Each structure stands twice: as C-alpha cells, then as structure tokens.
Image (cartoon, rainbow, N blue to C red):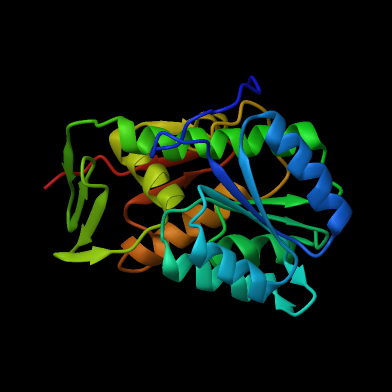
Length: 244
C-alpha cells in the first residue's frame, strides 16, 4: 500500500487529525510526519483537552492513547463514539496485552496500534482510514440487501433488524456490507482486511475477530449461535446466503 497523502477531506480541505496523547515527544514526531502528508494536526495532552478539541474542531480522524494523565483513554473513546458514530478512532497505546486490544476495539475503536509503533506503519493505517472515510462520502453503490430479518441500505448506510435501526460504527458497517454483498461466499481474512481496513499486510491484533463479535451482538438474535455471520476455520468468514 502506498503512502500517498489523502490531500482533501469531504469538505474539500486537508484532513484534520486529532492526537490525544500525554507523550509530547510522540505527538511532536507524529505531527511532523502527518504534516508532511498535508494533514492538519490538533494536539491534546489530556482527556479533558481532547474532548474540548473534538467538540471545537471536529476532526477527520482521532489518534488516542489508552492511558492519559487525567483519566482513561477508553472513557474518551466511549464519549467520542457517542458523539460521532463514524469518525475513525485509532488507539495508539503502550498497553499491548491482548485484553487491552480487545477492550479498545469492543468499545468502538476502529483500530489498535501498540507502541512503540513504526511510524511508516502508523501513517499507512492513518492514510487507509482517511481514504475509506472519504470514499464513503463520494462513492455510492446502489443496493438494498434484504435477509431474514435484516435490511442493509447501502446508499443510506443504515441497518435495520426487525424494522428497528441498528447503530454501527463506520467500520462495522463496511465489514457487514462487504460480507453481505458476497453472501454465500467464504471471504478470507486477507480479503476482509484489504477491503474493509485497506491494509495489504498482516497485522497481529484480533482486529477482524473483535469487530465480527461486535457485529454479532448487534444483528444476531443469539450471538453465541450466529445465523448470519459464520466462521470458516483457518480461512475467514461467510455470510448466510438465505434471502427473504
């Protein structure tokens, strides 16, 4: 995946990246690299400052440390996700245990990068998420997928289960739409990662599995015995081919 900058956001301006992290040296290095890509950068060193910055200058993407001087980055993530279901949130944290990664993704982060992060990889992930967010506003794919008790409106990016709208993050929607759009076919982890996250290289986190689990909780009648999203051991996942 190339590291070309996404120079314009949906408003026609440079993407605005909000960095919420108490480590000044990390913020300085990340700012310098982001600005080389033409991104605007807003810095916040505490949870309180991050929330104020988010409200005052809504960003195109957020980079968030899980541990902040005045509180938990996880609580910040929850607040940001309640305020905006679609803004990409990337947790970049020194807390790298599996439970930390899983919890971060479960509460609404789109991605989780463990420090010390290679700057090239981090920038590649930022670029991929900004590209996906931009394409969502410029590309439309006519379609309305209807299944047993699930309706997926591709154009409106809305999901309904038994007639009730289900709130999904932008990544959850992309993942569901991709699997449902290939209903009946086994989609490999590599294909899912490339299409939904825009990554062409493997990563070590349980990124796909946690988002699948979140989706099942939201769309399945019984998430422990899924009807729609089925695991194919050693390969990936398959969405049911049964239609209404």
